[in-house]
Image 1 (cartoon, rainbow, N blue to C red):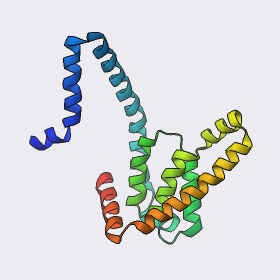
Image 2 (cartoon, one colour):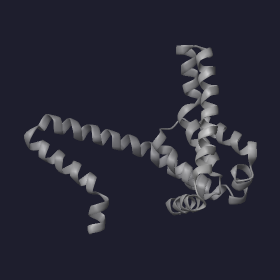
Image 3 (cartoon, rainbow, N blue to C red):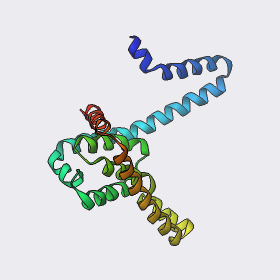
Length: 179
């Protein structure tokens, strides 16, 4: 019971504050509860399909195939696949983490996973289209090229700075999250 309370302590603190506010500031509390409920429903509507997709990909994609495509010896092919997969995503950033865990579980190289994650955040195709329309194609192209360079440098720098123990722990954590 103590472990459960410790795990949900922030939720319980916020719930207590909301209940107290219900007595002292009912309008604010009702608005807070409504906003919380709406956000919770929105997150569920996004995460449920993501978890279903991750489950299907976990079954459909063989580990050896993923290692060949995005593993340690994938080279430029793995980088390009990571960039492509990241660029075509159109989901919130928090929904990327189950996909990242799956990529790690299946044996993807850590730098390729970082490339996927960073490109998902920075160079999404819908974002590029918006930038072309609002700021022009020159701005978009310069930012796109600089982001690609930045993403590659950061991904490989992080991988080089990680010790073998760190990498092993990252892969183990991903395995535990998906299993």
